[in-house]
Structure formats: structure tokens, C-alpha cells
Image 1: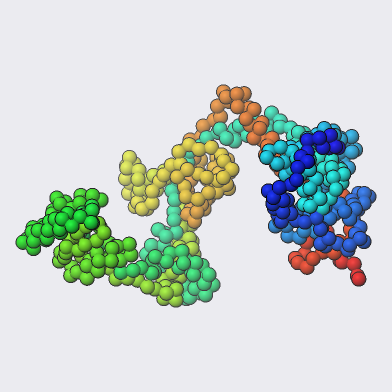
Image 2 (image 1 turned 30 degrees about the vertical axis):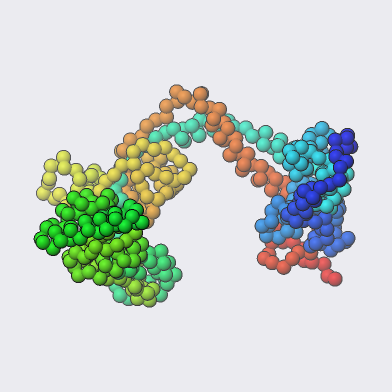
Length: 524
């Protein structure tokens, strides 16, 4: 097929660079020896819809499949599936008299980057790769390529056959353009659990059942249980920009000593920091560094700060930045709780949050919904409706707040503005309601319970439908192609009449595409 390209091949001796490329191809894609096929040697028998598959074809497809899908659970099953797919699609193409023109076959090889050198097809290079990389001759490879292209033509035909109706377009346009806003009260378990005292027996049971959850919480929140000693530090810095300049260094030290003398004479250290400190990040706060651990501090600075008596200014202390006057304004002892020491605390917290608190939150949300159905506004339930005139039976404020999502449209991610967490189910329920209606029950999103009322629902503006119709055609067509093609090929594979005598490697039970298990290996 490609004999006419011989005239373009180079007749020079292959240089080392070419040899390295050949070696790279062999290492990455496997040598020509494909004897490790997982089948019974020359006795291999595979038939798809009555068509016999040669041992050579199986070995070739197994090798190329292994390169494309190195993570395949079982290489024999992966190769068998590829053979079945190709056979049924090729057979169907022949039924419909779909053939791949020779020019297309040639073009697919000439433009294949694997057969190019310096961006151009190289005939001799092509032959070398077939022989040394794939272990096949040119005639066999080109016949295989023609068959693969013909089978793929059926995939292309299936994709091209996707049709999107006007009703589907309108429904999808409505899906993305109809907008709604929701008012809600969120009831979270931690707030609901405040004031609750857990039953020790329940905590003990929870601790036994949830050891893994307790350990995960400990590891995820390690800073709550393991913390270094910290000190609240205030400092005044006289910077030294050039440490090699002895005169400037001495001048900075003298200035710091003079300021220390003023502190000891009774002047306000905070005001002196604001006036004279050259640490611009803390100057306006009077030199306040907040609570700091020793980590990340200059060693000399840390020793002085942690060693000073409370509220006694010490210094000058030399660091890489200059000279400091330092005041320790309080210490916090370090924490070093082991998992064993923290287990009781964590168990109680998780029990209140995930069990007792969750039950209580649902009860509170149910109560709010009942009051809303009786006519109270969500704002009144939360105690935020100051416009209402108090009555004798008015209920006290609940301590919860109302919020609004603002307008949003349906989406496939389950995202609802201003709400932590996602829920496709909640969105479906929301868009079933009219403006002013309450959802039938509290919905749980991200561990919280939401009492929801539809604030407003905006009808679809169809003005731009015709302008945007093509966009929705592309969106729907692409999505359908992605779904319909694999399902169609799988149905063809399931209907295929397949027989084989493959010897499968040890591993998990693997089912063939039609749902059956592979036959047992033949007895030796």
C-alpha cells in the first residue's frame, strides 16, 4: 500500500539517534515477542459470530491493548473484549457495505506521529518500528489498520446518528434558565446539642462502635490536642540593614539601650513601640506579635521572650533583623494529649454532633416547619421579624437566623448558593414548588437540616431561545454521544456469539461482557 513512499526513504546509514529511538519504542511498547498470551499456544480457539480469530490476531491485539490500558484488571479479558468489539463492528460495517478507502488507510499511517521523524513520515523508520516494536510485517499491519478503521467507521456513524428533538431542546433551555430563590432556616446539630448532657452508657457504646471515626477526628484535628507552649510577645525593633557595618550596628544597639532606659524610667512601652519600632507589620499595634511558639522565631529572640518575667522588658536582643526590646505578656502551656487521653472528649463531641445533636436538630426543624405551616413567617420563627405586633402567646426567639439563596437555576452539581454542601435531591424538591410554598419536610444538606420556603420563582424568558438553540444542540448531542456509543457497543458485544479456550490467570472472578463467567482452563 505504501510502496510508492519508498522513493522518499533515506539510504544513509542509521545514526545513533535513530537506534536510540528504536530502543525507546521497544522498551516502552514491548518487543516483538508476544508469546506471553495467556492462551494455550497454537491450540488457541476464538470465534466471534462464527468468524475465527487467528492466534496471530489475538497476540497482536493483546499486545496493543496492554500498551493502551496498562491498568487492565485482566489482560486476557481486555484483549478478548477488544476482539469482540472489533469483530462485531467490522461485521456490521460489512453488512452496510461500509469500507474504508485505501487513501484514508494510507493517510492514517502517514499522519501517525509514531511513524514520523522530525515531523515527517519516514518509510524506513516505519518498517523498523513494525518489525522491532510490534513484531509484525508491513502487510499484516496494514491489513489490521484497514480493519480497525472500518470498525471505527461504525462508531462514527453511530455518533452522527444522534438526534435531538425540539421538545428536548426546550426542556434543557428551561432547565438552565428558570430561576428560583429560597428563604430558609438552617438548624445545625452542634447548636442544637448545646446544653445537652450525654448519657455515659451511650458514650461508652459509641466509643466502642466508632473507634475509627474517633481516630480520624484526632488525626484531622491534631492541633486541638497537640500544641507547643506559646507566649504573647510585644517587641520594639531597631533594624540593622547592613550587619557588616560595625558603626551602624553600634548605633542601632545604642538607640535600643536608650529606649530601654526610658521604659525603666516609667515611659509606656506600647507608645514607645508605636513611635520608634522599625517593624512596620506590628508598629501600629504597639509591637504586638500575639501568641507565638518558639517555632519560626530567631533562637536568641525566643530564649529572651520565653525566659522573661511577665511584663518585664528585656534586651537589647540581637537577631538577624536588628536589636529588639521584648516583653512577655503571658504564657499558654503546651498541650500534648495522646489519642487515648483524648478519646473520651472526642467521643462526647461526635456523639452530640452526629447522634443526639442530629436527632435534636431534626426535631427542632420539624417544629419550625409545623409553625410555618400554621402561618408564621420564617423570620418570625427565628425571632427576626420586628414588624410583627407581639401577642400574648408569642413564642421567644429561637436563636436561629433566616437567610436567602438569591436567584439560582437548576444545575447538575447540586449546588445551592449560600448553603454549605450540595444536594441534587434538594434542588429537585425545590423546583417542584411554587412561590410561597414550603418544602414538605426539612432537607438535610452537609449535616444541617433546612426548613425552606420558595421566595420567588421567575418564569423562563424565551426571547433568546432561538439564538442559543444551537449551543444546546451541541451540549445535548455531545452528552448523548458519550453515553449512547458505549451502551450500543456493549449491547452488540452482549449479543455476540463468542467461544474461546483461553487460559485465564489467577485473580478475582471476572465476567465476560454478556455477564457469564469465562470457562475453566482446559485440562492438560
